[in-house]
Length: 151
Image (cartoon, rainbow, N blue to C red):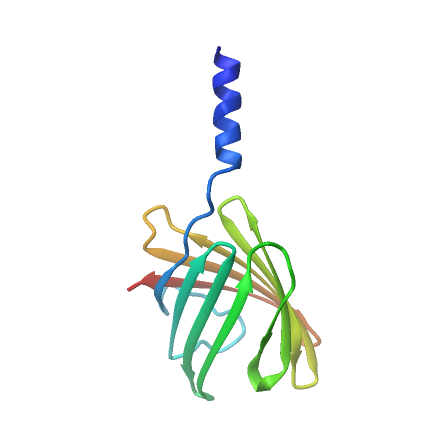
C-alpha cells in the first residue's frame, strides 16, 4: 500500500500545473546583482501568463534612456521570435524544469551576437520573482540575479 501511495504522489507531482507568473513586478534594485553591467534606475514587468502563453511588458529606465518592449512567448519548447533592443529579432525557447521556467534567447546587439539564459522562479508565497540570468557573447560572459517584488 505504501508503494502505491508513493507512486501516486510522484505521478501527481509530475503532472502538477506550473506556477502562474501573472502579475505586476517591480525590480528590487538593492536585492538584485547586475554583475558587470550597470543596473537600471527602475524596471517593471507586467507578466500575463496562461500556460503555455506568456507575455512580458517591460519598462526600464537607466542612464542610457527609457526602454519599453513587449515579448510574447509560449512555454512549450517552440521557438518564439520577438524584437530586441535596436529592432533586431531575438529568438527564444521556453521550457518548464519543474517549477522553474527556463528561457534561452539568442540574438544580436549591434555587431555582437549573444545568448541569454534565464531561470525564473517564484517564491513560495508568490510575492517575489527571481530571475537568474547568464549572458554569453563576443564580449565575454556574465551573471545577474534580478529580484522582482509583486505589486
